[in-house]
Length: 240
Image (cartoon, rainbow, N blue to C red; front, side, top):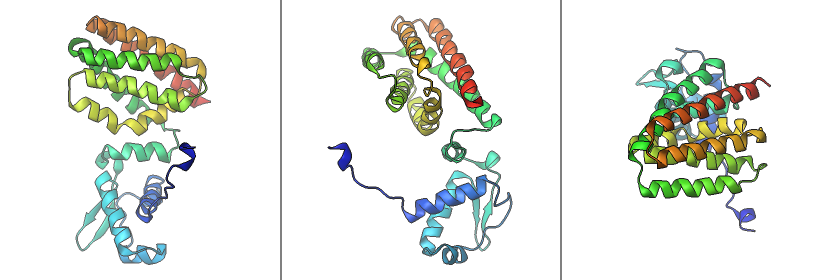
């Protein structure tokens, strides 16, 4: 009953404007270096107020999609060189998970650097409260239903976020939270093959054992196996 009575939400006009213009820019409809129509003109064409357009443009600028120049207007950027971290989510959502090869490879390479280091530091710096958190997550993994992809994806994210917390680096948990939507988008695709679930959760148990023993070398090696397995299987699924 409670789930059925959740508040009804609708996208604001600003959100709709942002979503539409992200798609227009990422699709190449508006070219790099092109000057967008004035805010007043866009407002009239779209049937919204000028403040809606202005707020949307400011947000697009914060992502690196456009540059706002006084007395000139909005100029479309090359998002590959000027895009911010926030743009990654838009790219993944725009492609609906079907990432082009350079973007996918870039994400996987970044993850190897980041998560191998968090595993190493977690084995060195973990505290009792981190071990308790890991045990709680592993218990959730044991009881996870095979067909509940959303729950499995969230539990998997919780494990990797716990690694970031255990690393002792205050930036790492915030960084992985910034990638949450991108991360869960890709792992949601990965866990669409339910045969992979127990394999991954088994890796998690092995990694926890290394961290509990403060064996940094074993933690790094296990994380390497997790990432190599994940990359291989994800690419197979995406090819289908």
